[in-house]
Amino acid sequence: MTATLTLTRKSTPGATVRRLRVSNHLSRRELADLAGVPQEQVSLFEQGLPLPLDSKRRILKELWSRKIKK
Image 1 (tube, rainbow, N blue to C red):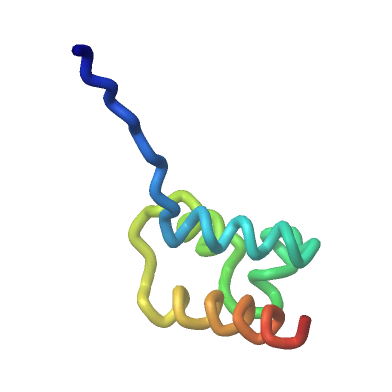
Image 2 (cartoon, rainbow, N blue to C red):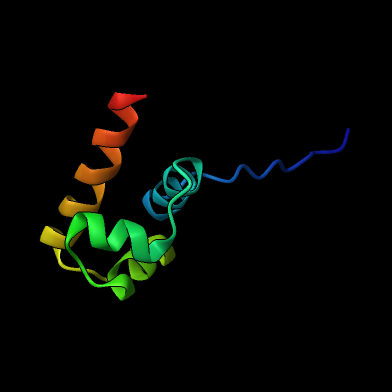
């Protein structure tokens, strides 16, 4: 009998933010402008790099409000 290792790719918060941004047809700059944060912070969030909590909250709030409107 042989064992099979199955790797599953877990969705990271950054990947979720990117997926929501793309599904809403927004560029990083557009999302940053709407959320009131620098464009670099959207990029950092999507890459899973350190970011101030307030910036994360603003980005998520903007994406969530767009998700609810759909």
